[in-house]
Length: 239
Image (cartoon, rainbow, N blue to C red; front, side, top):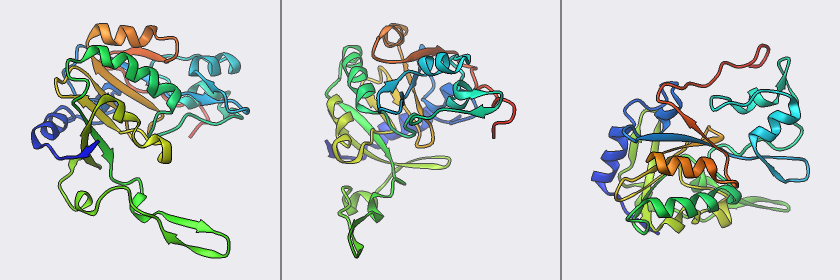
């Protein structure tokens, strides 16, 4: 990967996010794609095994739809009862991103020309290394100072650092930080993967054929969403 700020690509993203998070699920992703799918980050049981939200709903006897949040599938009479680990917010895990990359590769003519946007508030610039009987030395920031002081992709309430690489570079931050980019898209704009630091799910915009392939992938959990779908209301008693 290489740090690069491409103003035209940044403008393409920000123009498409003009209605960012207006309560519609698709508004997390740029406008203009033929179809959108909602990819659910897996939950984990007490042994650390990944589980699909549909499986969690069956365990709890709740209803799971394309508009559900995790609280909806774990709440019974307003009480959340999931005893495992909740889905990871703000990032996919390896069990999700690997099959996603595999499928996306076939739906772009520029799979080795991918643009990425990473939220600038992850705190890596202020991280410290903790050890016994020591207050902790400042950890090395993996993001160069020149990048932090340079231009950013900005939308209401969010700023992102931009870089470029191949499709496999979607895994770049996983080994040490367990982090995936918040936005990534190919140079031909055939699709866009769109997430947010606060969300335990990701929106993918692309062709109808792409979204159909994602929905049918056994190792992913993706449901089709419409342009006007919004999150369901919280169950009674859940805040």
